[in-house]
Amino acid sequence: MAEIRTAHLFKLKLVAAAPQLVGTTPLGERRVVEVTDGTFEGARLSGTLAKGGAADWIMVRPDATMLDVRLVLKTNDDALISMAYRGYRHGAPEVLARMAKGEHVDPSLYYFRTAIFFETGAAKYDWLNRTIAIGTGDRPPEGPVYDVFEVL
Image (cartoon, rainbow, N blue to C red):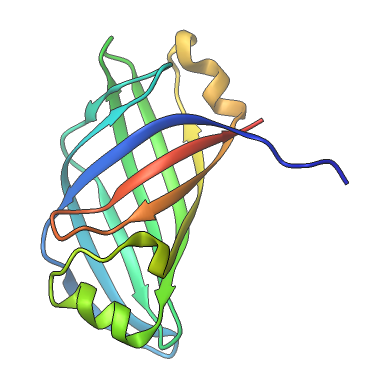
């Protein structure tokens, strides 16, 4: 089997509002978090989060937190790109407790990974419509930070 190679696409920094509890289901506790602001910066594309409609539909399970995020990126040259990702964050209970208290915890102490897909009508960024990306995350108190990698 061939080795999977990646190339760094951009760093994404998001600002999130307080989670809103939707309810408890057999799968866990459903929360919706509005993503209120953000920036992304990379060699091939950079910009900000387009205003409105960005949210994370989190499922907090006993063993992991599942992320289901939809946002719209606005590039510095005004192209709009839909970005959708799902992922997991989990770790030792004492590490997650520190994060819940608002501490910044070294991301090497927990697992935070995402699978990312894009959609755009912008000709310059059409290549994203056929690109799978993965992300590694960090969760400082001010909001999630991702390094996003194109799978080559």
